[in-house]
Length: 397
Image (cartoon, rainbow, N blue to C red; front, side, top):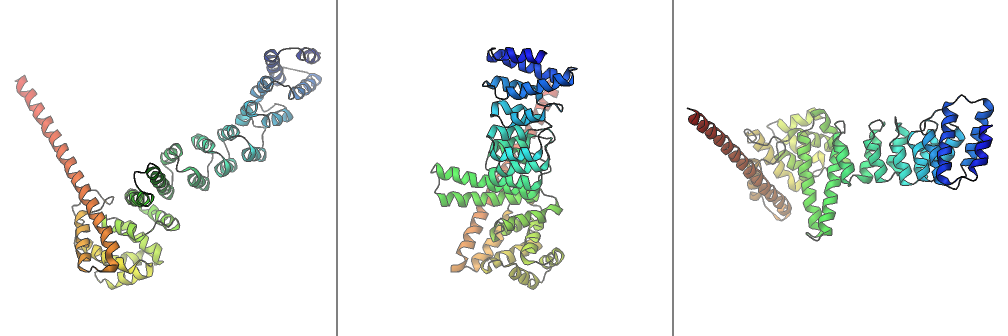
């Protein structure tokens, strides 16, 4: 019997030759027309080889049985529990490993083990959830890069919560066209926190100043994100902002002063519990008393009410008409009108509001100047192109 000869020889052969012979035996088991007795003997021999001191031998079996449905199940399960260098081929491909086995390996395994499982073809939702919950960052990235995996939204949310501060994971998620708007904003928030920590660690700004600056940058980015969001998704974004503690009076005022009326309306509806239709009616009603009651119901700070009142008056007066930048940036005329009105009502309690509006005014002026300069440069390029064309035509004549 050939298996008996193999067993006699393998005891004396060096590791490299044992590995080659083991690979040949495994292929013969899978593809040769062996008798039942020879198949049983070959399986017994391979079970014995699971105890071979050389990982080369066990790795040879793992590579041969990696994707085989007819491989000995006992051998495959033993190889899956071996050291990572041996186990990876079967972990990455074997159809004989059950979900429960793989979940256990994810929870207890080496990072390489998690990465191999994350890259499996047709990875089910349960395994994706396990990796999102306990996997290392590299495993979560491998999961996101596995386009054959079924990843539930709650698993993506968990990955964002754990590793959204890491650029490769953040970039992968943001590149997904189907990523919900709330998760995109969560990634923006993670980026802001990372930048604040980086700036503070370098001592470019104090911790409080760095956190404050990045918070405002995050609010600005969120309003810009909302401006590019479909109308029916803005409500979900607002709910996420409230749940994460980001739906502040400052952000809502920024949205209104940017002309992002949809975000403003959804925010007021979310905070007040009033239907969106009634909120819209109160906001666009010339009688301010309805909005006054809505503002109180929303629980926004009383000190900021004059700014909202004046911003609505400016909107009704048409100050948004002809403004550049869509609903993604602060409108200078709106901000300056609101600031001027609030200065007239200044008091000790309005100091923080006036400071916020002055920062808005500076930001709006800078944005307007940038757009103006961009237009000048673009106009100069057009004139230069037209002149060059005219010179060519003249030379040709």
